[in-house]
Length: 617
Ligand SMILES: Cc1ncc(C[n+]2csc(CCOP(=O)(O)OP(=O)(O)O)c2C)c(N)n1
Ligand SMILES: CC(=O)[C@@H](O)[C@H](O)COP(=O)(O)O
Ligand SMILES: [Mg+2]
Image 1: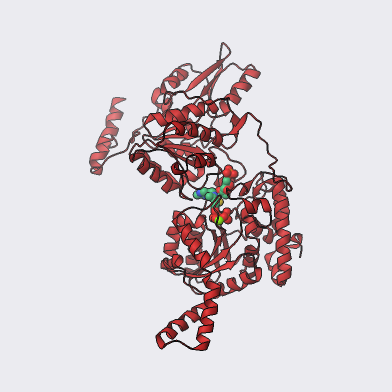
Image 2 (image 1 turned 120 degrees about the vertical axis):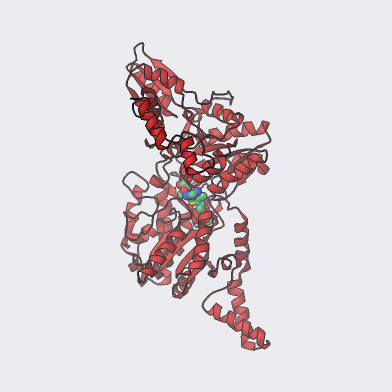
């Protein structure tokens, strides 16, 4: 069968093992060629070609539910469910999504993009199935990176308690985006290397046949053999969660995978099938990658492995700009440490890691832990910098609020991929952080318009003694020849006037400021252009003077408007013009007391409301 013949996964069930192997080769070839043109998540998909074929061979979607954790490795699933012709549109406007997407196919029963949701989702499906007396299989495929995250731990704990029939395919390629980290990873390594599955099976068979043990030993061995007959073996890591386990199985051997999945399908209760795979399999550059360069790629030359996207020599990515400045500061301040929740490659922290190995922390996919650990480090006397992608920071809202801001700790948070990120779509657009963080007391939230302002903001952040966030987008900017640092007054905006009689005011932020200034100048618009480099605090002094000009104001908000910069401006304007009288908790944390006493203190009791009304009559 050729790739283009596949309209439904039912078709692959009539194939022989050699034919399935040929299909796997065909899919690999297709993935490499197609992704070399569009870009996308290459190596994770190359690694699970055979596993996905075996899944679709044994489990019958859309009735059976197949959930791919993160979803970045669901390309093979897409191909097998009749979507190969859409691959030229991968991650483009109105094209094929890079993740599972319910509107795209009935075979996509779940959507993600953020890591470690698959186990909770699968347990939810299994509970619904049981309560509604339905009959289908629930299968979650999760990687060794995603399984270490907090959400996965919470789900495993509950799965072990609820004991519902479900299959967890644990895709172990010994890699997160870059090298996997953590104590759990060490435990996985010990299961991997134990080879219990095959060796013990042989030993037990032989021993029992020769019947050379005492009664007690024999009893134990018989029970053990019974478990092995079902393909089960003890793996302490999963046993601690009260889960049965099979493996490790060669994830590139379709025949073996089909056998193991068939056994797991017959199993009652939750079972983990441990599949060993090679990330990047079949493309040598990707196979050899240890730092994650081939995890997500832009278009590339297949023969040389070179990216086809070239940066102009005087430009650097925003992540690199921040990371270069961090290195300069860290050279002078030995207390500066850098933390990443599994995004060292994307956040360009590899050089920092190399230069200061003792001061670099990749804590795995653990955004919540990253922020709270930084708080502990700060209280212990270090000067932490945490780099987190904007959309992943959503996971750590409570830690930003409860730990960082409430204790008002001097931690610098670099919010990478802020704003639209493009290809990855709605799960990854970093457009909520301003709204999400603006309501939190004590936090400073800023965004530089260019590289020099980025240097100055990071310098200001480390000298501020406050919780300080700097957001910066995907993409790149021009860099000056040398890195210099100047302090920026916290909360200050800047403005430029074009023409003698401006007819309006544009308030913008980030790299758009210069683009707007350029267009205004080129077209001889008479305007004032404001660089609103702080979202919190805002520059009330400058804003007052702008409002006094009584000119139309255009807020160029490239993130969500609800709660964003425009909200901040409207809130301030409302105070200033005194149109709507707002009672509410102002920008601070509320300490303990009875609700009655607190409402009085915060002026949110009815007495305060009517006092306010009387004052304006
Ligand atoms: C909450 C969250 N943090 C970080 C990421 C970025 N991310 C995507 S895939 C990935 C690594 C996943 O590793 P693993 O589960 O082992 O899958 P593999 O790519 O090795 O198949 C990371 C860190 C994410 N998608 N979601
Ligand atoms: C799937 C995932 O979450 C990451 O692989 C993400 O796609 C990385 O994005 P960047 O390419 O912007 O680093
Ligand atoms: Mg992995």
